[in-house]
Length: 124
Image (cartoon, rainbow, N blue to C red):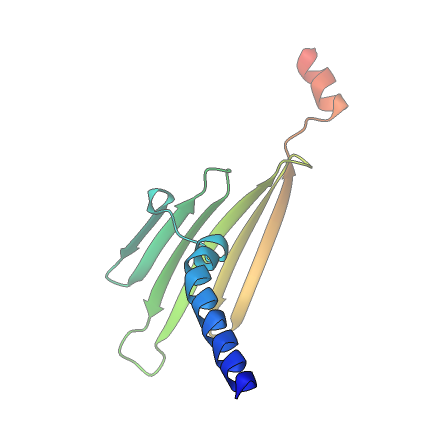
C-alpha cells in the first residue's frame, strides 16, 4: 500500500514538473520568427518571401505555379540565400531551383578580405 502511494506521488510530481517546465523549454528550444525581418506575400501566381537577419544573412524565394489548371501543373520554387561567416570573413551565396526535375543548387563563396596583390595595386 505504501509503495502504491509513493508511486502515485512520484507520478504526480513528474507531471507537475513537466507542466511547469514546458513553458521554460519552449522559450529555450523553440525558435520564434521575428516579423521585423520577415516578409511574406501571396501573389497571383504563387508566393514571394524574404528574410533579412540582423547578422547579415538573407534569403529570398519565389514560388510560381506553372501551367495552372492543366495536367502539367507544377510548383517551381526559385531563390537565393546568403550567409556570412565572421571567423573566415566570407560570404556564401546559394542560388537554387526546385521543380519536377528535383532540387538544383549552385553556390559561390566570396572572401571579403583583399589579397596583398589587390591592396598593392589599389595603392598604386
